[in-house]
Amino acid sequence: MALAPKRVMHRKVQRSRIKGNATRANTIDFGNIALVAMEPIWLSARHIEAARVALNRKINRKGQVWIRVFPDKPISKKPAETRMGKGKGAPEFWAAVIKPGQILFEIGGVDLELAESAMQLAGSKLPIKTKIAVRPTID
Image 1 (cartoon, one colour):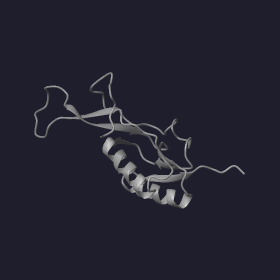
Image 2 (cartoon, helix red, strand yellow):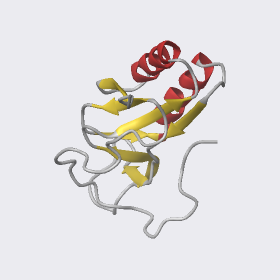
Image 3 (spheres, helix red, strand yellow):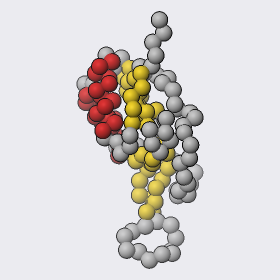
Image 4 (cartoon, one colour):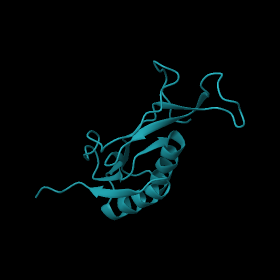
């Protein structure tokens, strides 16, 4: 089952631009290690699911994984070789609007080395540059 909202206010939305850096969802709040986006993108539900599956397989479903993004923007497309006009195309897929600095995934409850390799693998499934951030320990 792909990620998608149950209900939306508008079936089709305007495209808009992704400007600036993330001002929210940019701190590690739940786990100990996080995957951070370095580029702006519309991340599709399929991308998020592929990264999530890779993460869970790598950590053998131990610990806990938090998905910090949700695809709530419908992306529409017109069919190939269609003439202009006749309205906007049908919604094709759902995407999450990602700004640089936004946290995509967090892991807690597993050792740091395993979590880091899992995040590396999840980052390789995504079409953007990502980095791994570790929560600072308070001594």
